[in-house]
Structures are given as structure tokens and as C-alpha cells.
Length: 409
Image 1 (cartoon, rainbow, N blue to C red):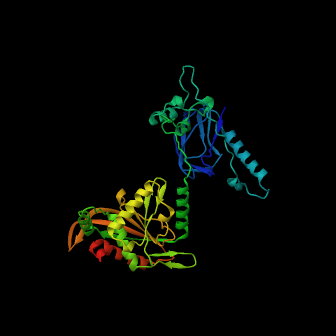
Image 2: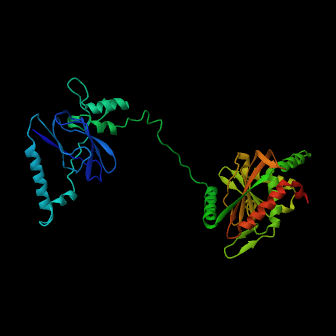
Image 3: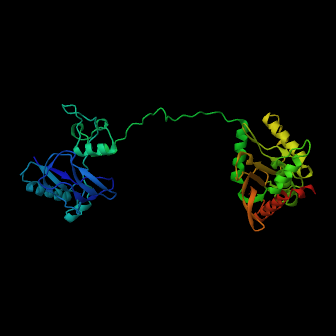
């Protein structure tokens, strides 16, 4: 007995389809799973395969023609079967549906905007096998599975009796080779009091102080020569960080705006210079303070910073050791970091981020020569420091570092 193949709904928003190409012609024998046509939807062109078997007796929508969802796309049946009455009955049924759902005055053509009927999609079942033990699958599904390297026996079929059809192969996902190897895992550890305080203060700083950032490159050739000469002296050893701490203290003395702090209803202009030096510890970061830094020599600064670093490592620092800074320096150059920006250590108005020294080509006296360059980045609280003030400080700092002899005056 003849059966109607209707225009399928191939997407949620599809109301009509266009036949891009017919793969079968009237008179062809059709098997379940055979590719009938390619249908254009509002989203893509999709292959449509048959869910029935029989001879193709009628094509209802020609190539490049469009028709509403659920209209007659084709009719399959036995060879020679008359389908004219079936076509007329379907057309009459469509008109009757319109009359029932629309007012009597409504024209018949309103049927074009009616919500089409949806043909339920068969629920996939485990692929069944024939009496000979062969998996039931359509020729198209077998060919597609071969092209994709899919084992057809592993695919669940949604066709009649569990027959594997094209869409089953398209939707098949092979199980992971080893789910254990990629199993997600994690551990959780309690937050230390130090980490809680650091988190709270950094969040308060980042979200309350309007940060802006300034960067500058410093020629380190003279600083490297000076440090080598200083460390050649008996019982003397200073680091590049010590040179930067000393130079910063001297530059702060000339730029009191940068040596200030935000106090809510007032801006405090500090007359003294206390430089905090960030030290990494197991639970986070401590910032011990070198007090009256501008009055101390390089060797004194070096001794204090070393003592603080050891005290932080041994967890022997006291609150008085990390309170009262007017400016902070954070140096990651020893870790290979070339440049970064830091969060202000409130209530200070600024923090200096120090990168590593990198050998790069530089221009000197009109010639390209090897040079050693270090990047400095200044984070500023815009409530206290403006761009011009921060830039002036950085340029003074650059002058001191590039000319270490000036720090001896």
C-alpha cells in the first residue's frame, strides 16, 4: 500500500524546505535508509533518507522548489499503484483543517502560516542483527561509517527494528580510550590567616584605589659596572635591588607627591622616606620596611634587606617590621620576569615593579651596540598622584640608576 513521505522539519525554526537535489527518480526502488534528497532549511542543506521501503511513485516537490513542512514530498508504494486519489484526498484534508482552525471569512491561502504537524523522531535502540549475525543498517549508513572509520556494530540504530541509518552514524560518538587517564581531580586546603589578610588588603586596594601605570626603560650598563666595583671591596656585597632601593629613596626625597598616602579625608605628604621591600614567603608576601632609607648607605640598606629576608623565611618578623612604609618596591627580575605591574600596598600612593635585566641592541652615539636594559613600572593611585608627577619621579629614578655615582653625593 502506498505511503506518503512528507516534508520533514529538520530544524526548530524551519517552516518550509527547498529541495536542492533529488537522488532518486520516479520508478526507482527505495530501501529504508536510502538517500532520497538534499533539503535546504533556514540553517543548512541536509541529506534526507527514507524511513520506508517501496517504489518511488510520485515526487511532490521538484528540485529548487519550496514547500511547507508536512506537505507531500514523495509517495512510495508498489509498482504501478495509482496515487492520484491519495494526492487529492491529502489536498482536501489540508483545506478542511484550514476551515476548522480559521474563521469562515479567512481565505484558504492562510494555510501557509499554520503550524505544521511534526513527525515524531524514532527513539534509538540497540542495533539489531539479522539471522546471519549481520548488523541491520542502511547502505548509506554503512558507506558513511566506512568513510568515518566507525564500527557499525557499535552504533545504536533509530530505524525500524533498530536499523542503523545515516543520522545514527552522524551522531555517533566513540567512547574515550581511557576515561581514567583524563579524570578530573583536585585538592582543597584551608586558607591561612596571612593569605586572608593579603587577599583582603589587595582587594581593597585594587577596587578602591584607581590605579594607573607608567613604565620606563633603564640603561643598566653603568649600574653593572658600579656594582662590580663595590662588591670588589672587602666584606661588601650589594645587589641590584639594593641599588634600586637607594635610588628610589633619593628620588622620593625630590618628589614628595609620590611619597604620599591617601587617608580618606586628607592626603598625607610624608617628610620621611620609608621604603617597603616585598619579600616572598611560603604563605604569601611580606613587606618589611627599611626606615629613613634616604639617609642610609648602600651597605646599610643591603644588610637590612638581607636581615628582613632571613627573618621572613624563619617567620621571626614582627608587625613593627612591616608597618609604616611610604613607598613599596616589588622585584621579580630574579625570576626571569622582564616587566609587570603591581597592586599598590595601601595606604601608599605608589608601588614600583622591577623587571629583570635583559641584554638587547641599543643605540649609543648613533651606533647600534649591545646594551643591558631593565624595565620599571610604577603603579599610581590617581587620587594622589597624577601622570606628570609619576613620570617626573620615574625620570629622576632613571637618572640615579644610570649614574650610580650621583647616589654618593
